Picture 1 (cartoon, rainbow, N blue to C red):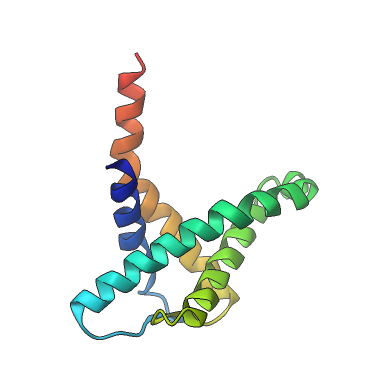
Picture 2 (picture 1 turned 45 degrees about the horizontal axis):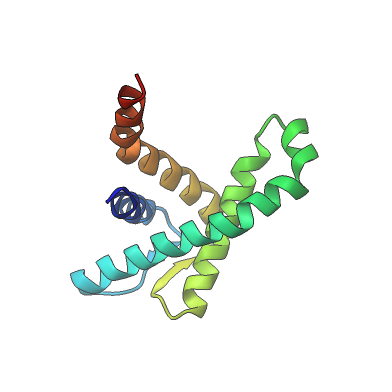
Length: 128
């Protein structure tokens, strides 16, 4: 159940990122939009699961030298890549450039964090 909640929270976060110019949801009907958002949320989660650890290992020194700010760039690149991958998989979602991906990833991370905060708080209270 927690997985479903996290995917839905990510889908809402991706939807929130569409307020930015350059992040476009290219479908009309409500059902198609919801399906696309869930698909993109799953795709972004898969991209993060596979590529983010590789980027952290390869860029370890860069993360240290930039005090972690390289992580923002990596997240932006991964979100941009997710947009490209969505187009290749015929999902009607696009991220048109690096800066759209950069700021979109920040919005997705913030909204996802806020929406999954109850899960984090529940885990903290059950550990005691």
